[in-house]
Length: 199
Image (tube, rainbow, N blue to C red):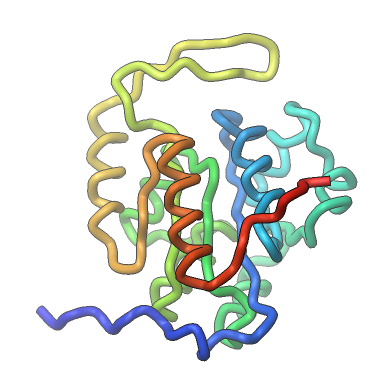
C-alpha cells in the first residue's frame, strides 16, 4: 500500500482561505459546536438537508446563521459548492456535530449529502478534516429540542467511528473538548488565532 500524499501546504491555499463547517442532523452539542465556529476566523457553514431541518428546533434559523456566517445549503444534486475546495478556498473541513449516519457514510466512502461530499472531496484534495462524532460512549445524555434524553449507541456506531479515525487527513473528536483541541491545533498550524469575541 502506498503512503498517503502529505496534507496540502499552507501556500497551496488562498490567502483568505476559510473553514468549511458542516452541520448535519444532530442536536447533540449543537449550540456548543456553533459557539466554537463563532470563535474561529473565517467560517462558512454548509448544511445537510437534515441539518437545515434540525437547526431551527434549537433556535438557529437560516437568517440567524447568516448574521454570522456565509451559509451554503444542500440544494443541488452535485453539491456544487464543493468545487471551492479545488481552488484552495477552504483549508479545513469540519463536521460538527456529526450524526452516526454521517459518520457511517464518511467511513464507507458514501458522499450523497453536502457535508459527506465535502468530506470526501477534502480527502481527495489532501485537505484536513475534523469530525465531531456524537456516538462515542456507551451512554450519551443529550439535549433533544424539548428535553434531555439518554442515547445508547450500538456497536456499529463505535465501529464506524474507529474506522473513520483511521482515514488519512482526518481527526475524529469524541468530545467537545477534543473538538476544541483539534481546532486549536489546526489554528496553530495555519498561524491563525481564535476570535476574542463571537458577537
